[in-house]
Length: 183
Image (cartoon, rainbow, N blue to C red; front, top):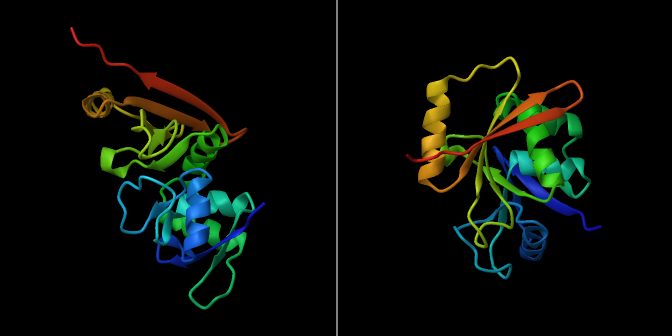
């Protein structure tokens, strides 16, 4: 198994080596090639930029070493604390990210759609993300208006809006998908 090396810079992880960048991207569309919005192939000449949650997933799965600016390797405790500061309810969001990635989906940030994740079946540039996922804990409330707003946005961009409700104990997830019908 190949182990990659990335450098933590603020809230992103950079894979500086171009060959490693290409290889990691080709393994499952991890990260984004710097300066290339929609790469058409794996043969690009750019560093790869990972979101923290992607880097954490690869780190936990023993596929990524993360170093700091001083060249020292980051520990699991350090990267976990960094992620907890960066993401609200990191543990809950990570459970959903991990579940979807382990099932073979490509998961990217959904911030531009007002949700937690945009989820692809094949990968960016190959297909459009058919799902927008909002992660909640069972104790969190979501209003009917919020569901309608999210559903309308998802429908407008031809995606399905999904709530992922996570039970921390047992790490169980209930996925609830909304389909919108026009009369």
